[in-house]
Length: 280
Image 1 (cartoon, rainbow, N blue to C red):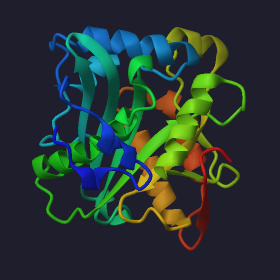
Image 2: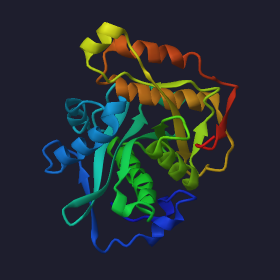
Image 3: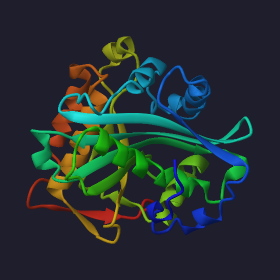
Image 4: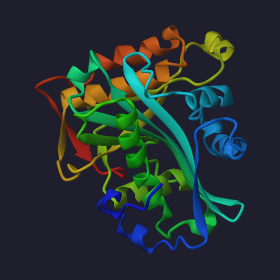
């Protein structure tokens, strides 16, 4: 990973204050990497109890995705990042670049979508600008995925994070939302876009209670278009469809069916969606 200042979000300028002298970045693209277990266990401890983290075997399989071999007409590149100080992990994240291929490119013209799955900055590094870089590094993954997929006409990148709705009381939820708010990310108006994350519970639990998707909000950064106050309905559908295609690789079709049904109720061509601040 390179430190590309132009990749920082408009409100993330304090990332330039990070002293990288004692830090290093590790990219994990294989479950055989010595850091994989540590990264997965930390993410699971943070997000697993809330139903917002996939099982270890799913993540291990995602690390095997190769953009040169599209899945369901999409080139996919998943990776985990660790920022270390010595042997101590002080920041981590995972994300997936999604590049539509024919026939889906018609609905995603020139666009690559990056799913910002999970991010953690540990207490010693909070407030110092490291989170800014953890939001910017996935842009490099997106460009690499485009090149590996053999695409040449991709000129727009949209970063998408699934976030809890603000409740005003849960410290980590509100801290994440404040961080993205300061960075300049915007939220798809939840009154217009009812978004659900898949139900990651074991199949036996789902069978006992039916599918229970997790209601979340979509917080986005349209790189180079951050100041635009609205999003075309067709682009909203394209973003959600890309996420559901990614999730659907490892989810049963009947468990994804309720989510795909929601897609038909999203704003469509000719409609627009208001972009709000994440804390609204």
